[in-house]
Image 1 (cartoon, rainbow, N blue to C red):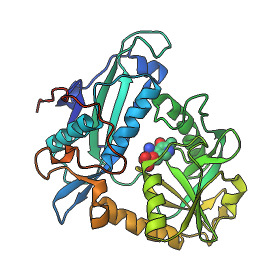
Image 2 (tube, helix red, strand yellow; image 1 turned 135 degrees about the vertical axis):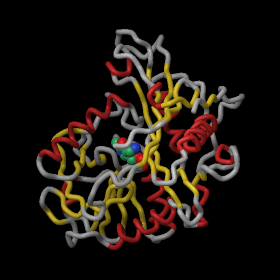
Image 3 (spheres, helix red, strand yellow; image 1 turned 90 degrees about the vertical axis):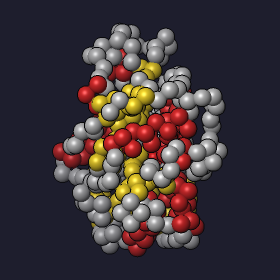
Image 4 (cartoon, helix red, strand yellow; image 1 turned 120 degrees about the vertical axis):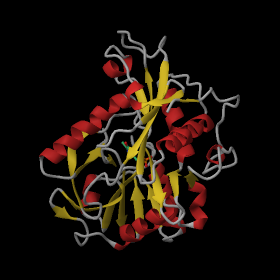
Length: 337
Ligand code: PMP
């Protein structure tokens, strides 16, 4: 993996080597951090780097932070501005992955969420595919169950809860599969280890509801819109039984990392014809055009990094819901190159 050259850390852009924490850091011991994962897509025709739906990602990031009772001195606008500065400093002209993190930085012992101070960092690094075979993933239903809302809320992107994902992912790969399908405590399908899941059956696209212990994926939301508006499909957000997967016509994962990936086998059973089906194929084409800024009607989701100073952080550049700005002047941003 190529390390970044810079990081947004303690309110400034600093060399990556300076973005360091001590071994006593609270979040390192207790998982008391939240994070986001976004992608930047390079568009060679326009010589532009587009970040996909940054405001929606930062909104979920701030909501995840609220679940951990973190009071962050940043709004979506501040964070989007900081990200722009970071990417402009890195000068990426290729696809990249972006990782914002908010964590309790106190060097102290004691399990709690109060009387602690959060810090925010953002890094970005060049990145390609998350799975090698996006057109034919072999998944297995994991023996691990998804964290429950009353244990660690799955709708938050909480660092500690990714131990749950890591257990499922490594066991799936150790058993020869590419990815896991994780069921929730009720035995219904929740999602992958870092991706949401859809089935297609008799022309209807089905995905678990947000009350089934899933992360409310930005890609899931994107896909729900594309299935209805572009592919004219009926979508259903409802609980899914495990055996419905085995009998589906098509299945796919979606998420920032995995993008849109066809699941063609589950537990050694072929899904549908055992190869990527027409819905996933059409969706992938749409998705890759959209994220690279090539679909005019979805340009609102693509935030250009290099176009116009600070344009990226314009308050009117909304993606979906209105920005939940806390207002006020952004904290000072220093750039140390
Ligand atoms: N579920 C989990 C557990 C994830 O970690 C991710 C990746 N963030 C997703 C779903 C997909 O979310 P998104 O589309 O917002 O990347």
